[in-house]
Image (cartoon, rainbow, N blue to C red; front, side):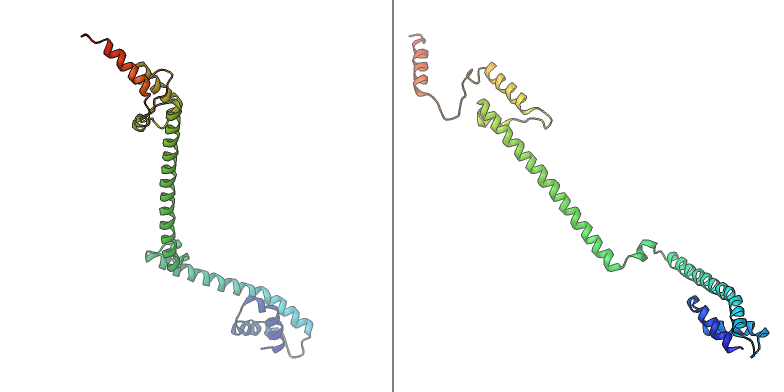
Length: 197
């Protein structure tokens, strides 16, 4: 084996990741035509001829290594683990599951609170509009207006029904607990006067 050739080959092939034994075998093959009196140029030329063989060796080793790791991976997959499980550590899966559950609970709570807020705002709007139209509060509380119905139109129609059926005086807002006693006394006298003796 030519030691000069070994050193030149070692320098040229250091990025290939070949073992010392593999480089010695390449040097042994290339040394057959070299002597101790060979010039540095001859040794460098011989090393340049051996570099493609070194690359081929590296490629073959890489291919065998990949094949071996692929075989091991397929055996692991055969055990029932899927790729996403092997990519993610177990502690992270547990954390992710608890985090997903917590997010789902928060989203549900948020949806519930939004629905409650919308219902409260709608009830307040209905009560305010009913009060503005002079519909007594005890009647307004019992009203059920569909979610897609126009509040103004529904309450206006309800008030008109009350007036049409003489349940509410025309043009006058009746407020529970506020009765004009003078008017009531005069109405009572008129009624009493109309009674037969």
